[in-house]
Image (tube, rainbow over all chains, first blue to last red; front, side):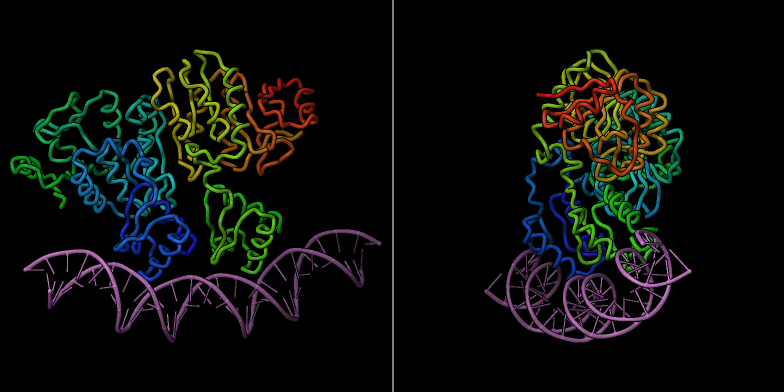
Length: 252
Length: 252
DNA sequence: ACGAATGTGAAGGATTTTGAACGAAAATGA
DNA sequence: TCATTTTCGTTCAAAATCCTTCACATTCGT
């Protein structure tokens, strides 16, 4: 990869996060530390970022970041860890479906720079990848649901019917013995299609979601292949997941 | 492949990426390094790109194409006026198709609060309406074209084929006697569908677009029903539009 | 068809960029 | 505080890229 290309990529990264460390950059840019440092120095000279010990900071103020990011303040640290762990379950060159929701968005941030084909119905998630050249992104069509920025309805479902993916990464409203649930009929309807279209289903849910039942039943627990959560999960729920042969990943 | 052909191809590449390296160009253009370098030097002399070690960078800054939020758009005041004038041509309760582009985005801002059903393939434009309670917004699906934030490809075109609208509001790359043109084959392809799907076609174009021919031919002038531009338009071009029975709106 | 003009690709040396090594500086933790 | 670990900046040789030159091919006008 050439210098100019690398430096563009660094700037892209800052559109979705405020800090990157050298090690991550080396991996993403496939370059040595020396080279990354040189790139950062140059970008700093151009006033495009600020170097700090261990990496570099975005100069864009926090206000500029997506509204979406503000919504996801609750359980932020947990969600960040879950995002990191879930991203590790994905292999390069796979086709993923990502649904909406702040936890999934956190996964998405950790997928930047990977070579993937991603299908989503969430505009905030699409925006995370909008400058990426390594991710091929397809958005489902559909009616734009206000507030959440997700696309729903017949157009969306029709399109999901035409797709098949290796992995689905999905957030949920609640998870109990009786299965997965969410808050909105239309959303649940499209999520059912996503499950059908995917070979493997990964559920991401912070510990607060366990034992909670949201408005609309979405699917039985057995539809999930992997559940990724944080270390706050109670032992009884760990048992609930594991005893059904579902892989449980606890992010640290 | 001839020099001119190669150089056009290089420019087209830049509509989707900000950097290309020499090796890629050699492969795509089936030419030697020497030749590619010569082409790049020439394009640089014409102010169409910037050479850097390892390849070349697009000069069209990303702001110009995609970043509607910031106010770095060229001809800003003109576009604002055009947006206002074009919005007056729309009646409540109509179904509109809006394509991408900064001029159309300006129209969109002037449609906020109106009761409309809007179909678009542009994410930046969708975002303008994302909080609106009076506009029902449908996004076409499709492959997300980097940088421009528009959805394209078969999914998009299929969906446009299922839609019919009262009015299409469309920006363009250039407009001459021989018709409308734009910079990218895929975009042109979806725009053709939009024209087919609409009863009335409104073209919005600041005066700088007149007499300019962009890369790909889109449609004949006669496809347009109304052209909205600013007061900088030359008399000869006014004549060109009016003499064909196309309504010309000059925004003040 | 012919020569002139322009476009093309290969070869060489000049220049820039890169990655590894190593001592200096900063962060960390007891 | 002090020792340990991590990160930083500098230097240098190797690699990649660039520019120039030149011989050959193609296009154009006569």
